[in-house]
Image (cartoon, rainbow, N blue to C red; front, side, top):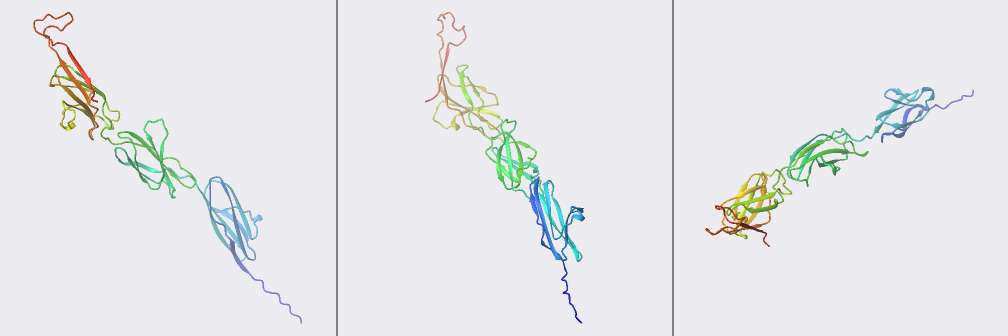
Amino acid sequence: MLLLFTPAVRRVPPRFSIPPTNHDVMPGGSVNLTCVAVGAPMPYVKWTTSEVELTREEEMPIGRNVLELTNIQHSANYTCVAISSLGMIQTTAQITVKALPKPPASLIVTETTATSVTLTWDSGNPESVSYYVIQYRPKLSENGFQEVDGVATTRYSIGGLSPFSEYEFRVMAVNNVGRGPPSGIVDTRTSEQAPSSPPLHVQARMLSSSTMLVQWEPPEEPNGQIRGYRVYYSTTHNTPLSAWQKHNTDNSQLTTISGLATDITYNLRVLGFTSVGDGPPSDVLQIKTQQGVSPRGVKKPPGSNPIGHSGPMTCEVTRPI
């Protein structure tokens, strides 16, 4: 009798030889997910997502299945399933759509000086961002925003600002896709500083032999609200300003100084001040009065002053060389 022996067929449960991989895609992008499974017998391979069958049962391939995804707009998980008579296995690939970051939240001003503003904010994004961009400009300006790029923290101080000026600020987050939309705008005013320029166009004239009228215009760079002016005057030019006589006035732009000596040259300087301090004084202005009185009993020519009034008065205003 002849006995025939058939070799035993090796039976192997399914396993993935090439599992699908995760992908990051841009909005509207495309990707192919490849899934390869082996075993004995060879398994069928199909795709599903969120319990939705993506491969029709009658078209289920053996061993290898490629899922083509196009115009991807949302992140999702895709599951590859391998099935044979010896079992079923599955593995999942994650497709992440890289969107622009959301606007930062809770932007506030935490500190101001005369020339700087400190801002803080929250990321506003569940995922990490690459960096932030701060935009700022003077309030009501028709010019575009200035930018501070590459800010790595959620707190930043911007310097180089003008004193006592209103600015508006906003922040944007940046990731590897690009810049996200800006946060809401916050505005603030920088603090005051002492004026950095003197009053302009200082003038003086004598109202009488001992009373002087002084006029001026505000400083070009007041750096705050001018609270008043100080008028310094002295008969000596080379003494320190602290040794000169001082006449304080409010925020008006003229004043009178009385009790002056006659026939003397006065040196005159004016400065403005804010709540923070004094600004620089103006250049020295010199004024000299000369008064003549008509002799008693001499007949006055037509057009002369009436009796009881002082004679003609002249005034010299010079600036020292």
